[in-house]
Amino acid sequence: AQFADPDSVLAAPEPPAGVAYVTGAWRYARGEAYLRLGRVESARAEASAIAALIRNGDFTAMNQANVPAQDILDIYRRQLLGRAYMVEGDYPAAIAELRAAVDAQARVPYTEPPYIYYPIRRTLGAAYLLNDQAAVAEIEFLQVLIDSPNDAYAYWGLSQARRQRGDRTGADAARRMF
View 1 (cartoon, helix red, strand yellow):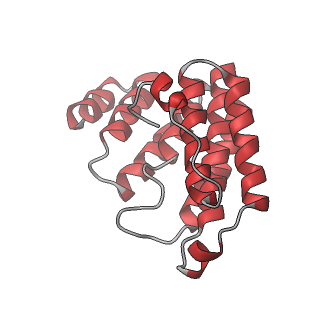
View 2 (view 1 turned 90 degrees about the vertical axis):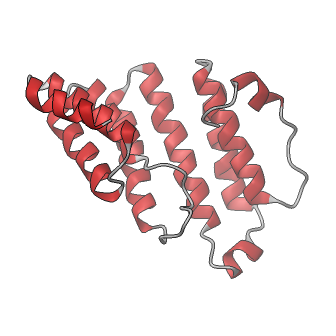
């Protein structure tokens, strides 16, 4: 989803029936690929398919193993919708979806490795930056760094937030950290 060529992600075959969580992850990866290609409506269709899967899929085995499968998929769904709004420049709507995703991610039990592969708060911080809310973005990036002290993306975002606020010294310090 994050590093593969979007066309190769979209070419991956659909998982077989009966593996709802894997199918949801496949749909999430497809949504990410569509967003990277600028195909917002296709990404929204994948988010909608994830919502239907959450409602209708069989997650019994995962739930019995204490894996919050539906919650994880709903976080991915909201993240896709938030990023779709970002692509369209509707930053308030993006912030609303991403805030809900961040709050939901905070409720998912801690595991190693984590259920969600990155802190979605980074994307929320980016949405605040794009909405000219640098002070709020800075707080989001600082929170990521509290939770993940070596997160280079968060240092980059912190640098951009401070630069946007006119704090060159703080921006340079954050930039040196990443």
